[in-house]
Image 1 (cartoon, one colour):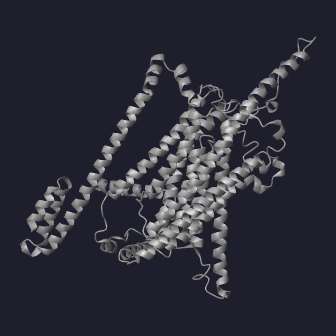
Image 2 (cartoon, one colour; image 1 turned 60 degrees about the horizontal axis):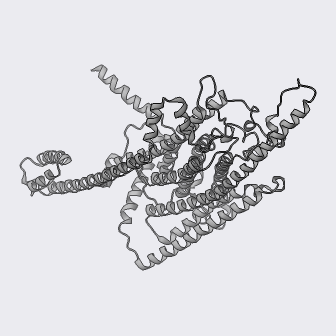
Image 3 (cartoon, one colour; image 1 turned 120 degrees about the horizontal axis):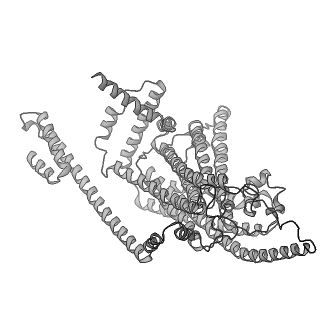
Length: 635
């Protein structure tokens, strides 16, 4: 008996230990108690994204960056690992490093630094194969973890209506009697109060009557303004990209800071100001707060996705120009090598024991390496987006809160309840910024293996910085609404951006030739040829033949068709089970009403009826027709 009690106490303490080990759980609970579940859902989503990026960083760091650093040739041994002679003087300057040029460009941070040898080190580590497979693994893992999270949330939902006796459950079951900390008790009290406000708003929203014609006109007007904003932002991005291409052909010393960073700043400023315009347009529509949030998220998502794809299309033009430039550089390098060898042979006339022919890697001409250029662009976008976000919080939230707090006593009107007042936490803008940034990570990590690590630093600092900003500078929203933790809306948008982000990367891998003098795939016609090379050299001939047959297009198409039919069947089965679940819940409600109205007809009293109800509900879990029998029994 004593051992059983100690074991139960150990299990309880272990569960408490696991709960204490969850990162930032207390911070998120404190935010939820003050601002509601809608704001807390953003921080839960940020914490989940932190875990995903941690796995991506472990893969890229342990299988790409660390092997190259430990076993690869050192800096200065090859032209791809050496800063050109013309850039050596400024390679370590802060402005150059901030732009990820100089020493940062010729390091393990970017694609171009990696060698194309099949094996490196005493372990014969196959770096090109590992680079290719890790890129594919990161994409596959991202799809898997997002779909798994969505499936888990669907299972937690149960597919039915769980709002039966909602207020009664909140009154009698909300308090946690194991709380022993006064601060925790205050947070729990505030959380219960916020939950009641959310539930009351949800009930009132269903009873509001509207002027249909006026509402339709205002919503049409709002959507018209939204389309104008989207078109204008797309044109502005296109114009900025064209200007950046013109600046790229000029001398960098003649350009100012804005000309060098115009593309990144335009995209960051559009992502900062356009959501505010969409929020103003949403006031015309007068949707329920939760529906308005989804519309706002969808519009910002369309804005950011359109801007990203305009940027990608412009980047593809730049890549094509780099590939054409590489052809000229390759021909010039051939002539340069021939001239250097001729000059060397001429210098040996009459002296056959001269020093061997050697040219320092910094003096060797090289191609533009379009892969490194792509990685640099995405790293710059990520860093500029982080800086813009933090500056916006400091100026738009902190300084505004300080002004309202300290100038309210000597102002003509009440600054706290009038203009400018404290800011509300922008859920839609922050969620879309997080999703958009993650899309850039998925798109650029193949060409810059350091991107997941940079994003981990961003997410880690954002959790503390934004938690501080929310608790110190923001106020709860005037319109309270409930955002369920099992809501798949964020994950659905993340899945869409994942699909749309990986399409350009797969296109570059399959269709574009790699640079001839940089990166692990240099010397090949296509990047995926590393798989065929591995099958040819490292596998038995019979196994290589089997794997080539499995990659036959006819077999692949057949497998895809079978998978599509399987998905259709499982989807139809899930819909049928969901409908059956809803029907069973409706019949259970009928049973509850019959118990309340017919309890006087049974001599055993309510206890007998409750026993019959429990037995009937147990049967209803497996056989639907038992519910009809039970209802007929009571009637």
